[in-house]
Length: 111
Length: 123
Picture 1 (cartoon, rainbow over the protein chains, first blue to last red):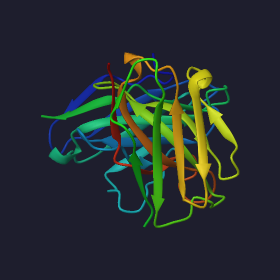
Picture 2 (picture 1 turned 90 degrees about the vertical axis):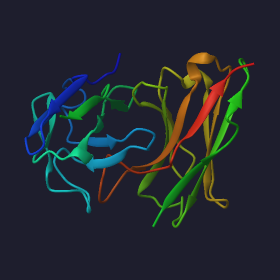
Picture 3 (picture 1 turned 120 degrees about the vertical axis):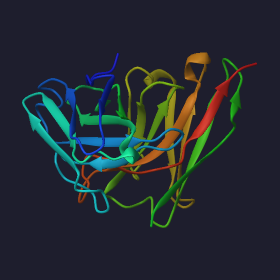
Picture 4 (picture 1 turned 180 degrees about the horizontal axis):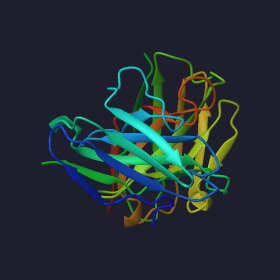
């Protein structure tokens, strides 16, 4: 059981927007702005898409955005494209002894 | 640009010790802005953080693995290593090394990952 809760799957049609949630507690997501999101295509290493809740690394499309409200962080992908089909993971700092926690991952299917 | 590359045996016998090395190229492992982490992913499952090391040698481990994990750093060779003892089938996974940003841009994120190396546990 992962420390952060994500939906197992989401789907959307090309051009649509989808949002993936990442729910934790006040000891992790709710207490710190060190939430990041990763995209992972099959057989590939994860790729950083969002850091510090809402910042995009250089080279990442502005179709990807992040936000946080309370203990839940969210990743929104607008203008869905076929290439966005992948697994997405959130990560947060935690004040517990674990220090680093991941969400269980969300599989995005582009219909 | 900085690149990470994992290396080590792809097959480990049960009860033995898994040993992997992550070589860092294009930059110095001694930069004070980063931790260096190990993360694993069993087939078809999610990511699990194993632990990390700072260039000084200071370490943090996932409590669930702490009793079996040792992470070390060799700054002259610009690499860091993972040892996981008493492995079982549950330790079979793709093992990734990653740069964990401590300060500056991308703080609190794994900004660079190795390609991953698959480890099988079998006799």
